[in-house]
Image (cartoon, rainbow, N blue to C red; front, side, top):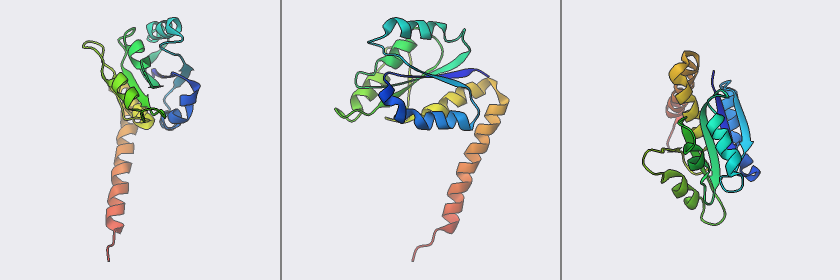
Length: 161
């Protein structure tokens, strides 16, 4: 199975990424986490993205706040899918990161999840990997069925006086 790379712009983003790590662990998907900055470590960021496929990665997840150029910097150096997680900051509540992540030029897409949407980033990464992995696909289908059943159970238990 291919690995998922989870790259954060700062170790202060680690708490935001906890749901991402939890999802990947729950599904048994191998991953690595790293701290790289589009602005402070541009050479290392470029090297990681350029070598990612050869190192067994299938998807890159990039979490960054404020200027949030990390996902775009990675996408500029690889054709692997890149998923951006805009991280909420105290300045503009994450809107700056959202716009920086989602507004990519034509030909360099970054799939973008919600502000602080780390769990969905992991699920999207797994859906991409499941295109070539029938076992992972089946696990994702079971998880979706479990979510559906929980909602139906809540509906059945609902009482309004």
